[in-house]
Image (cartoon, rainbow, N blue to C red):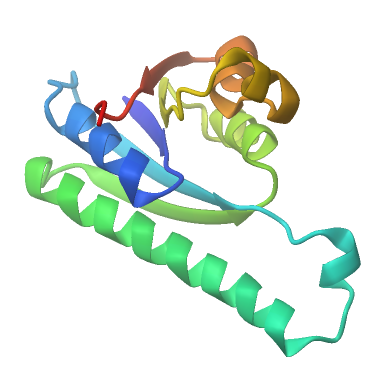
Length: 146
């Protein structure tokens, strides 16, 4: 079974990894932990500015660290599973759907901000887009209420 886990940050990744760890997945399991690094605004990325380059590098390193930490937690629970660690550049909605299709995921597991309707309408919802267009089953894991 191919399970894509798309993580954004540690607050949302924790409940996702906990959900996956507590589930009894059938057969041989292959995990792909994906973090998508959003592009810098076009007008900033063209600047010859070390500050902007530093922001991009920090985002990339943060994503790698987040994916590595999630992979370590999964490896403890599923020592025989193969775990792929992916950090990609792009827009989360598009990149997650692209990876689902190209990797032929059986299940995609996403986190949810739980934004209200107006905010979701204004900025869009990654989980709604993936639920709508994914070629596989999608599970959305909400973080615990504070």
